[in-house]
Image (cartoon, helix red, strand yellow):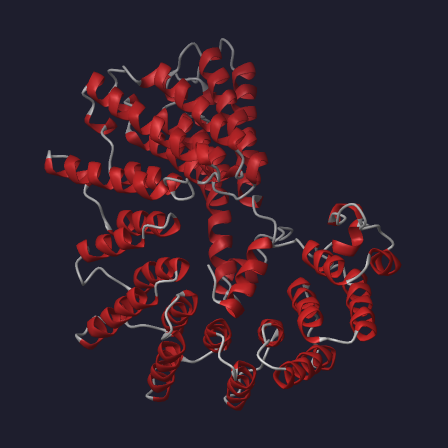
Length: 571
């Protein structure tokens, strides 16, 4: 009945799998495995990932301790029945270490988990040396790969990617020219380092990932080891690393062409798959190469295309303000869906992105196009397509198009649009009011029009609190513009600026634009009376004001710019 290494190994493996199973359980919501409901894992914190890896390592340490204890007790002694040492019942091998290292690598514990992996590898290397070179304790490429994987997942800092590459260096020193098939280096460790760089944000990531790819190709040609030949994962990882690079689109296109050439020359594992095309398309979209992105979309078989990849291409045209091109892509989605490719069927996001593309365009037809697209979206929803349910983004896109076109009735048109929106059960949010206020600020045609716009803007601004909606930096900026353009009486303008300044400071949304507008519309004495700062020589910078006055004004530049674009239709 004495437990053996098989007994310990089984328990170790179960603990090592616990974190993965826990992640699955957490993704299931309220569906829980029986081993949780029976409290078999009593004392485990369900929210603390790494519990399984921690216990797997505890079992491994227990095995090592028993092995060492057995050695001390049986020095010079042999078992009478089989002439083998008694401690052979507990055999620790490199597979046990690999299981625990891999568990830590996938436990989601960041840098701490990667450090635990590195320590375990060092422990295995020490045991291998102290055993006199026991082959069962020899670290292999998989052990190094697991440590590389851990550092790849650790965080988004370059230092951890460089640490992963350090273990690739060591793997090459140990295994690149190994004649042992079990120790042969493969493209897996290179792919893991490439993946590490693809997870880092920065211009350097693409170059570093590409360097690893070129290094792999060089080693493949030198060693003639077929396992070192780059595959689709290798090339896709490098393209992914280039996505945020300034020339990422061009680089991705070159790598994709290289994959095609590799496949033609006999490397069947380098054939571009859907994911490779998706990454290349994303890189092109992010780098203003939407036409190239659409060309890549055309290369895919219709059966491989789906809603997401069409939406990605349309998003590129949205960024570039090319409404006609975006709508052409949308029509292709509808055509394919009608032919039976239901995965290509457009959803509400598809219509919203297309409407925004028109809204950002310079075409005088943008309002008409947006209205027609909204009608189509509503029609599909009313016909039973629940994925095309209209939402705020559609109405905001149309409102932005109306505002940017500069029609004389734009305020009443936007008001009417938002009333229809509420009739359909869609509640307005902060962006809705920001668009309306910004629309009012753009009115200049006549005094009557300006007076009406001022009343609408004030009413909208005063309605926020009663609706439970808080103003933000965009709101206060738009109100500053309303005061600048629509309030004529000097005293009223001064009091209005004072009120907006105090409220924006109180809620932490003061920004440079508000300061600039106030400095432009007031005298130096008036500006100092309101702000406490002098504007005689130069307009004071936002940095000269107490930081708490602008604490939330610059939290998310991207979100604010996107919100403003909803209203003015600019890129």
